[in-house]
Picture 1 (cartoon, rainbow, N blue to C red):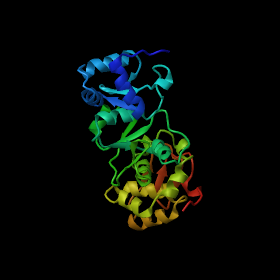
Picture 2 (picture 1 turned 120 degrees about the vertical axis):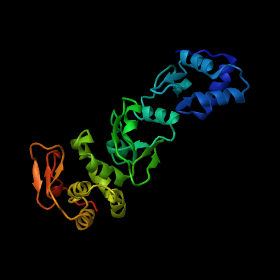
Picture 3 (picture 1 turned 30 degrees about the vertical axis):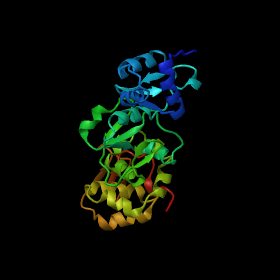
Length: 265
């Protein structure tokens, strides 16, 4: 597919081809037009580039995906994290980060990123603001996130605690079993304790229950710091899959017994 351009468009596209941004914002475009002394309003220029297939729509108004010439047409990269990147391009101060399998993938601990990447947001009010193509749940980490693969990502310890704070938010525990051991192997006992410090005791108990086979060292520290007071549910109240007398956990969710998982510490 041939995408013809005008001389002024060629100047801007040459810069974009050189810098290869995945996303272009209205502000980026306005800055380039000012730099090259092009008097066309940014919104008009963006309309022209969109019409010719150089800029592709995203879920965010005023943010576009750049389609370089090598694609020979208006074809998206298909990157499942693009909706999160486009959201952050418009809301750079938003408190959100990849979690669960998306985080494990970003840390190099899962083989694939889910088609609906999971994102943790710090406040309930943010849930409706993110694109529908993302799987959003509320979790405010105590530990700082990392910037990996161009997006914020929860620390491995935060991911583990998030899984135990909101076990129903994990879309597939069967899939999680594929990368949970690698995630647990990377976890620091001190950082898990820091992430648990100001959370309800039930979260600590679920974390100890989940990690007792994989990381008995961390589980023992949790056991010593969080004496049991009453029964804790792992999952919604319903048909019991197993009961763990050590942790007083009634598990209605996990498709595996965490007591039988191999020690990775």
